[in-house]
Length: 256
Ligand code: 13P
Image (cartoon, rainbow, N blue to C red; front, side):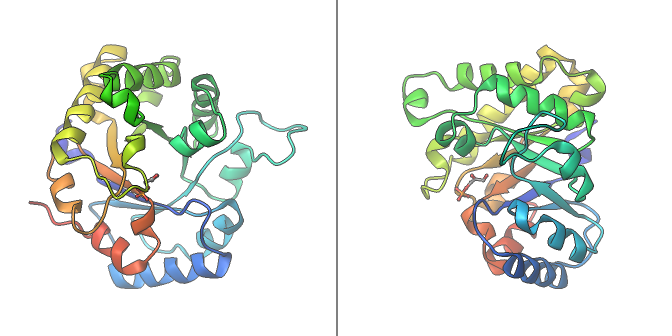
């Protein structure tokens, strides 16, 4: 599979923003402005409370629903947690897993993320696996070692048929919410490393099929340059996904 066959994946991670009403209004407005999309996927990841309502108004081809987290157990006494069965039930196509805010604010470990990735495949809610290094790790030359460890723990137990459906998000922690975007070259370098590593863990065909998306201060001003890089297959957008105008421009990135 060549680069052109990996369908661009453009996701809005709304984090802990938007009421149900705001999420629905955004979804309706975006669909109206963007229309049917045949050549890219647009993924909206609202808070748990708004998933059902956004699903209900998501009507156009090309639009997909994602949750921002889950628990790996099927059911049980886990107060405050949401299972993959529940996310499938509400109509989620994807679930974002191992986001740096989950890892660094809430203490999620690589093993936790691995359990979630495996459970997500069991329920056919496809994981968007986030990896990325902290600033001090980059500055001490550990970027690839960190990304390799996060990746390996999370995906080594997958079947090849599962691995090919993965979406991996490279989100350098120092670029998230800071306004400091990785340069297209910095992002390309790590994306290339991730693809090669998927080749080592599985095979070349799977490595060429996996979509690897970039996240960290993506804005209308840098979207086209990022999407021009050969190994960048999409974007995971935080701040700039909260307004229809800026997210619309990102969705409508121009192929340079
Ligand atoms: P920002 O786009 O606000 O930097 O957030 C990125 C992110 O965390 C997406 O998951």
